[in-house]
Image 1: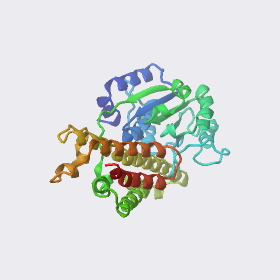
Image 2: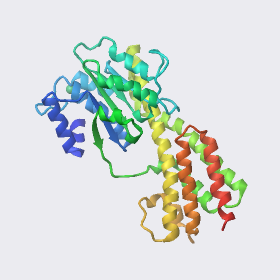
Image 3: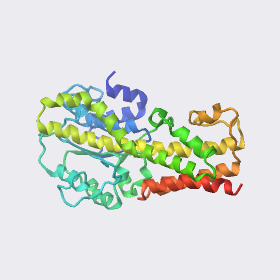
Image 4: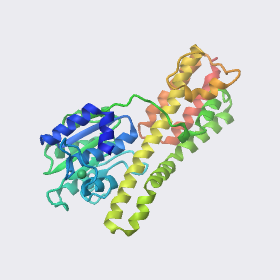
Length: 357
Ligand SMILES: [Zn+2]
């Protein structure tokens, strides 16, 4: 089974309608791919690009997966593939000062007005985590979406479509890849549950304990970027080794792609880290009112569930802690200092808590 076939077996209706569109020359110029699944957000746009650009599609319209174009797309070496992502730790895609400002919308857009290096070929632009475009960048990009240069395909990718201007959404054909599993990869966050357990049950009223929890949470959060970088490097290791024999421009393409992926992976890890903290306290509220409550993610509470005796908490306290967690998520979505926000969260969970009990 090639990549397209396995995609279509998971999303038969969507796969079929895209193939039909290709057969009838009715593909859109811009797609908005919406999915809560980070690895789909990473892999599907390239598959969609190969559907559009493949030189030898099957009689059913599906991309062959084997022609030079399909292979170059999969390897990140297609010369007219341009990708934009919130790189490094910055969580914002900006317009940029001029065409040469790297990782900016202006730099990205300029490439679509240059002569194609693949004659008659497609220029493909993918904006990962496009919700990180700030309002100015989104407004600027609207013009391109309204009048796209010839033979250009734009694929915007997001897990948070609500953060996009309605005008952006309405100019794209929306492809929703639903994924019902909210599964956490706890291996990425070993130690987090111990910290939350301590913070919830053993740090109350103790400033030194609360500070210790805060420091551990901050250390963990700060390590996420390195973790993202390491996993992307690992994934590309062999290809990077092969690229020693490639031209420098091809090497550069791979490096740009890796940078973009690292930014996206960092954002994914950070979101998952915060979501885990939130889910811990949300489930704590359920457990505080009924010890045998059915939990959506019991694996997160295993330390508590396996403790004997299980530490107890008053429902009112659990609710208060949850609202601290919700507040933390809210402020971290604005541009506050991460460390400050996490520290103040840990202190208010621990210190304030028992005072009123
Ligand atoms: Zn092909």
